[in-house]
Length: 123
Image 1 (cartoon, rainbow, N blue to C red):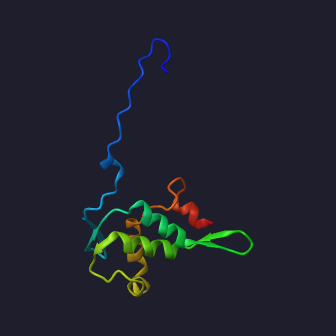
Image 2 (image 1 turned 90 degrees about the vertical axis):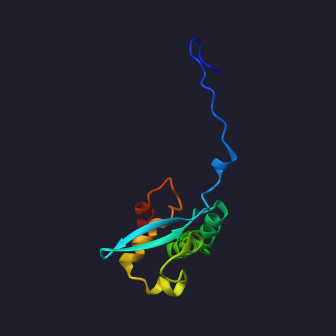
Image 3 (image 1 turned 135 degrees about the vertical axis):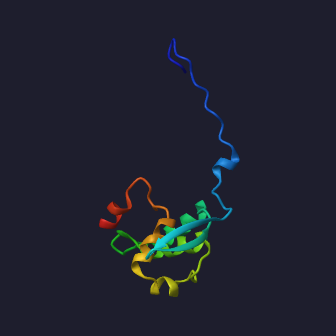
């Protein structure tokens, strides 16, 4: 209910298309060693993100949990990369230059957007 003398603004209704992740592929360009690497990628759907989160959470017998960043990054990269100039598999990720790996991490959304990745990684 609006306060006296104020006009209540009507909210616009959310359209179904606005709830959906972008699945039509687009190109992300990564510059590494002054060279271009073009990666065809798509958005990350809600269920794919939840599967990656679930796989990355490791529960211990003492009731605590740890987040396995390696599992999360690999699962998300496999879900979002459509085509790349490298194989999108564990073997390629393991042999990837660490600086290049840090660059492709930008394709991966923060698993917990309310907290910065830097804060999360500090533990």
